[in-house]
Amino acid sequence: MRCAHRRVAMVVHDLLVVGLGPAGVTAVVQARRDGLDVVAVGDEPPGGLVAAARRIENLPVWPQGIAGRVLARRMARWVRTSNAAVVQDTVIALDRTDSGIFSCTTRRGAVFLARSVCLAPGTRPVPLPPELFGLGCPVFRDIRNLPRRKGAVVAVVGGGDAAFDTALSVADLGMRPVLWVRGKVKASQGLVEEVEARRIPVAASLIPEAELVVACIGREVRDELLLALLPEGLPRDICTAVPGLFVAGDAIRGRERFVA
Image (cartoon, rainbow, N blue to C red; front, side, top):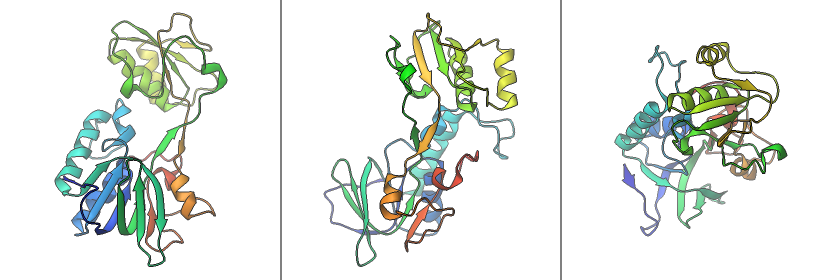
């Protein structure tokens, strides 16, 4: 994996990939196989949110499932061996010049130029609702940064796959999860059955003994870069109305459950 540096002479790359989640990683690896000069910028390590998944079970190559953190490590290795230039930073501006070259500026002040761009920015957590403020205990948005405190009571907020998967991960870590489901249960039947088998409690409100909270209440597409270039809205396919601009991942897949 080559390290791109802001002090080198400006080079116009064949492809700039924004985002290093599963879609971004796939774009990087395939573009390098096709012989393109690629620079990739992501504000998280390769794999992104995949690392938060306890087990991914819908990949044919792993019929027994694979832990998200293991898959994320494999993605990082694929990117590393592709020899693409990779920068861990946040893209704050993306413009297309009159000559058709894209210019990307990062939060740390780096500037990258490319003939084509693949935007795979992924998602961010939706804002916390008022009832999750002032709880008197720390609130986390996924399990990756959750402190490992054996025996601690952890309230996992949400009724979808992410919440149920997180509750199981919390139990695996030797902590005591309690699911706080504020509405209907939307998790898949397999996850519901596994939670029941592990006897993880489900509550309709926050239990007072909770020491930590993980809010798995939904995510939204990080669409600010896309909408700056596509004011008419998100595209429905990889190709866009802007020549040389492509979109991958959550921005076009919506709620479909694909890793890439």
